[in-house]
Length: 250
Image (tube, rainbow, N blue to C red):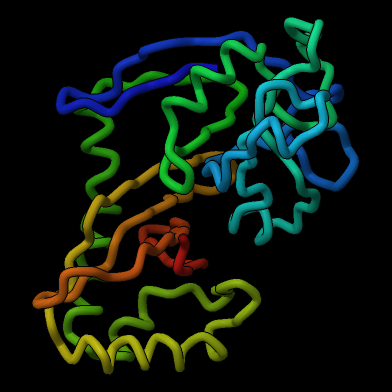
């Protein structure tokens, strides 16, 4: 497990730790397959060791598997955590869990002190591929343009213009696009054409058989101090980016 810190100059590696993963490896697709999921996830809570069985060691950090992309692909399962080891056991074999990511207790304690619930991403991947910063910026520009265009449409208050950014198979916590549209219309009515700002913007890319962006931000209308924290999932369809999930988090 590699722990990075965001700095003005980019990502900086600050620590790395040995971990154990699922008995059957990675690429989790269904409940009980003893695999660890791959993708972009977020820590949803911090469970104290006092609330857990000794098996979980010095605590646990659940992640949001299945995420919106997993749900779109029909993946099942639950209860994927980063957690420690029982007393008397320093670490486990490389492939030894039912799907969780398991660290030695001292390592987990360091992670717990560093991460933030709901904010810190956990990217689980079979491999790391480093690219030059200038290449990364060039690749991300088409999406940045799409996000800016969505922001402009939302600021305009034009429902039809905003809806053009959403995929036909959009889903928000079980609601289809037609079912979710009244909520969007209500939001636009409250904004009343004021400019929308995206605070603390986070964009994470996940590329496998499709190209996906996981976007988190605080949506604040001009003239207001606070807003809702939202997460969107965008997918590239040809030369266009479309939103297939949007929801309020936290």
